[in-house]
Length: 143
Image (cartoon, rainbow, N blue to C red; front, side, top):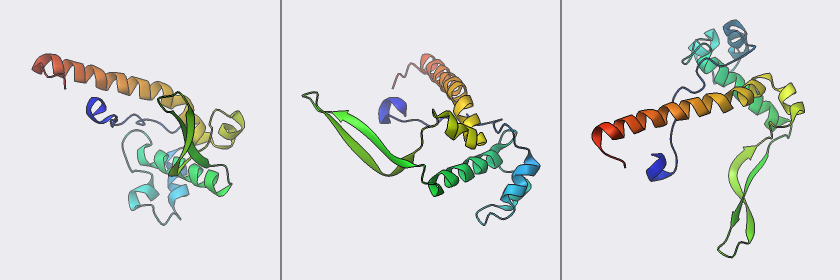
């Protein structure tokens, strides 16, 4: 997918995440969430130690960021063939800068995600590439 479409899905790179939250804490947080399933309310959704409960905790912190006005439109610079840079905003895509320590301190789950995801994502991506390269060597198909 990465070579042909420019994107890929890396399964389970969040597995085992969720520092500072217990399943009981997550179940309590989900008790009144109308979007939560019965498994969410019990803190049992998803894979890994915290799985879906951690994803829901991340979601709650993102909702708080949006409600507090701390999310801004995602913007990207592109250069034309003459080297002139132009700024474009992506519709309905927002971001917050987790490089700001003050933001991370107020958002323990997103802070943990920020710190852990760099290593976890790199490791999961490397593992996926290793598997792809091994399959290509066996089949001779290099996409």
